[in-house]
Length: 443
RNA sequence: GACCCUAUCGUCCAGCGGUUAGGACACCGCCCUUUCACGGCGGUGACACGGGUUCGAAUCCCGUUAGGGUCGCCA
Image (cartoon, rainbow, N blue to C red; front, top):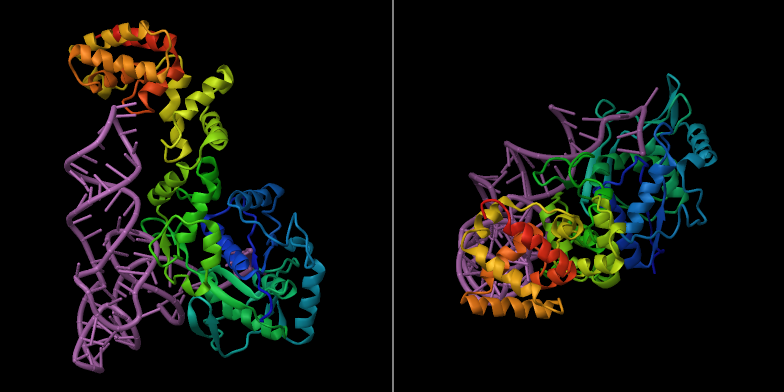
């Protein structure tokens, strides 16, 4: 038995959680769960300038939303705290003094720099394999600064100290740190500490291959929370960026991913983020979002879009939402899809009008109106029967009635099942809207 | 610029010396259908380039090119 795995996710509170960061967290989580190890969350907030509780909350929210729980860290506690770098001053000071008395540091205009070992460094990366970087030349690899003149600590130093103190066994982080790793390794050596294993995860790029930065569409986890994505879908998609089960399946239970996740299966090449594919995967998960969960998520999506649901009876809202189950790929599509339920005057789609509000269809819609008016029970079954009977009477396909009716009542030519949406809307509103349509100029 | 990583359809992933190079998203047809979706069937589409190694390379090696990363008193 080798020693138990301890991994960490160490984000900086910048006010948002990048999908790349989220995937790093995910891979750490997967590895911890796969090995029965421990995931530590550590907040790297040495940069006092941009450091707020809200920014930290964004990290918690993102991780919670994705279902990534940590075993040690803020809100959890643990033996290696505190888990905010801003609160670990004494620890850093201790290591700093050690380095200083061992002669590894020198003062450079008030800042403290670490005297590098001038030799090649070889690393055995769990993902990238053997990588050798020659640190011999001070011109190309200058000594790093570890402490500012104002006493502030620099990332490389505190990162290493914390990995030592927190007994981290595996550092799984973005590939942007691969070139920094020799510096870290040298720090470990100077501190006479055992080095962890490293695994550098390839980066996530935009669809066009350019670097994904803060502003890019879909770069932050918050955009998925707000966009009405299913967290399991986003998590599943992130699993597939750089890792695969090797058997062509894509929709996977997280338990299975945990079971099969191996660092040796992690890709070495960067991956482009494909929102279309995420949207598709999300739609697969949306098919399974039903009942209460759909109601809750649906209401939230509508309210986010500015729909005032308090104006409608609760049964009406739930009935309306029920007709949308399994019909939208992402909840953010819901307001457009179901908006006709919640507005007093609907706008008729011009293209639809040109196609379905014709002289031939006017009498058909009139007949539909008459048939509906005669219905005692206005439910889906009765509506369907009435439409079919009317179609038979007029000697045409039911589709000839469905299209103008849908357009008159919803304003669109796409939407939920006509029979069901009419039932939810209710006879009064339906007749009203048909009348309005029939009176439209040019119809 | 130096150094490091990477290179299979537009995108994600499979392939790890011998395959008609496979799957998914997207796209295009057809079918199903109360619309739109879903689903089913089919199609377009890739081994970056050049050298080796080998009886035989998408698979191994070298170079070129391209993309990404690092080179901060940011993390």
